[in-house]
Image 1 (cartoon, rainbow, N blue to C red):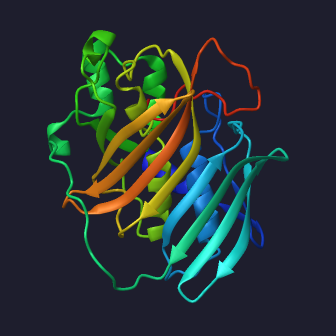
Image 2 (image 1 turned 90 degrees about the vertical axis):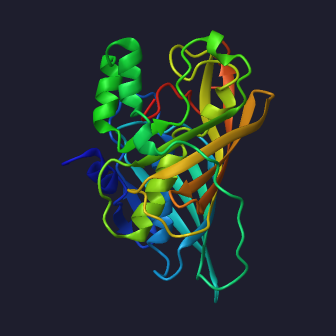
Length: 304
């Protein structure tokens, strides 16, 4: 591929096997499990391929059930739940080696006129005023570790944290459970609206759980917790392009019982709210691994 963004487009281009059945690639990675955003994005592609083109997705609700194995294809089975006059509903089951690893339900809606209002976008520096994530890491460490160097070459998104990265627990005094990043695909994604929607679903799982950890430990360096996405929900409000800058504002209202809840709002540069996101994640002390069938620890998501 010419660049990582082209690789993302190819990753989201599923192979049709049979009516309502698709197969997605799962690249061989050094991670212990398939990145959850990849599975969500591919599942949404499968759902969208069975709907009318004039009905963009307006919401999705998903559960990560088992860890996926890198390098092993994933089969997506689509159930056509409903085709109404205004709404279309699809249910997708992702299967790998005979085991269900992921469920997604997506609803599609033909746009229509209605009321208009939204909360304003927070005031933050422009993305051009902020360093790329890899540049900030390289400046702090004096180099980019080899594992991060390899990951950066495959990273399909340019990520820029609004606030400086915290590198030690001494930096956490008074820190609130909030985080914000500017993001955009690191190259053009073409003009298919479904590709942009599914690419954003991919990106939405990359940094959201950071907000849970901000008051507890630095986002970079050694972790005291294994992390895994448990469920994920998105509401799509307006059309957008994922290869243009968007602000991902994230916060965590609560973390308790081994789980942390995070919510996000995605704005374009003009301050329009594009997408709302909710996710719950597992946060388990690294020495406490009891359930072999629970989602695998997140030991290195793309971009981290």
